[in-house]
Amino acid sequence: MLLSDYLRQHLDHDRKSPQGPLNRQIYHLLRQAILQSHWPTNMRLQSSRALADELGVSRNTVLHAFEQLIAEGYLVSRHRSGTYVSETVPGRLAQTGSVSSVADGQGGPGLSQRGFRVLRDAAIVGSPSGAFALGMSDVEGFPRAAWARLLGRYWRHAPADLLNYAHSGGYLPLRQALAQHLRISRSIVCEPEQVIITSSIQQSIALISQMLADEGDSVWVEEPGYRPARSLLRAHGLKLVPVPVDAEGMAPQGRLLSKPPRLMYVTPSHQFPLGMVMSLARRRMLLDYAHRHGVWILEDDYDSEFRYEGRVLASVQGLDDQGRVIYMGSMSKTLFPGIRSGYVVLPERLAQQCADGFAELYRDGQLIQQAALADFISQGLYAAHIRRVRQRYDRKQTVLRAAIARRFGKWAVSPHEAGLHLVLHFPPDTAAGADIAIVEESQRQGVVTRALSLHYQDGKAARQGLLLGYAGVAETAITPAFEKLADIVERVLQWR
Image 1 (spheres, rainbow, N blue to C red):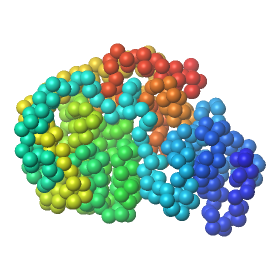
Image 2: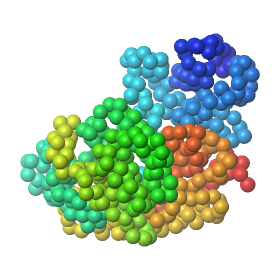
Image 3: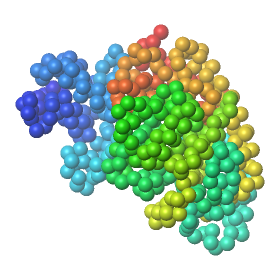
């Protein structure tokens, strides 16, 4: 069935229709049809102008619906080519046969609305490794022999207690080692009893969402920001309030300041995805606001270990004298992704309650791994490993920047002083959805990257560009992989 015929059958042109304004009706009808696989992925839709003429509505009405569907990943706009049904998660979900009832709001045996939203917002790509996947570390540089020795000793001689569940926030020697490390490296003010060992940043966020916020509470998130964190917060029933970032980090202004949130989620050491480091003045401003209004700050100290020039600013938690900051970190990038080990440092008055809540909710374990990790840190192996890989990552970033400069010398690239990825910004006049089209094509050709626009909640304000992770790519493979990606970029954008 033609798109125009399908819409003509279902649209209600009555201005007082209970189905809402025409642009929202078109949005909902198209979304439902895509979920139910009425049209195949990559099918080209009628132009907005032609569709508006056939439906007898204004072109803006159709454009508003298309823009919302593009922002949510259901449609893709390809420069000078048209609008297409996307290959992203919603299209794949429809093929399972269990989503149509969810799309209709009927529940049934399929996914819940919350489950559907989690998958719709998912940032996981088909291939989690290779050039230029995010969230990967240089596993070839990990000291496997030393790690195996520590693990083997505990497996051979571990007391029975290390085979049980973890309680009271995790293995105490690891909490002690982490507290000492964080005091020195990040100016964290804490005692071991304030540290809870988790599996990841995501689990830390889930714990805080359940222990410190109720469904319907608001949380400030950076715009653009870290999609997995947004997905988790939304899945726990919190209301996301996007706050724009500027050169100094999260920048709340005007009416936003009159409505304090329950939580504030920030990535101050290396803003994800744009890469700026939050200024000391902005950190103090957010702290003062949190103190005055009773807001909890969730500090995701993302990439703080990988700074290549200049002095490292102290953590926001280290500046906090009122106990409003909850500090979160992970070993996935400093060691290797599969270790699934993170931590959260809580204000003293919350620590024991949250440790008890963590034990109730998650029944955590992995005490033998935690014991080996405690020794890895206390014996100086962790600090030495970070020093080595920091040099490797600095060289890799230099190689990638040189490759970008050769092909797109005048295009903006994110700051270079910290982090494990770069952002290649497209020219301001690039059509919406171009970066998504490039990501889809590059994945088909074996290059993994991520669209910058998908990290914005407001699709209309989204900037076009690509996120390029370089940590997990062999240094010699960076330039050939980028040349392949650059050919795709030029072809899709028809840029010369």
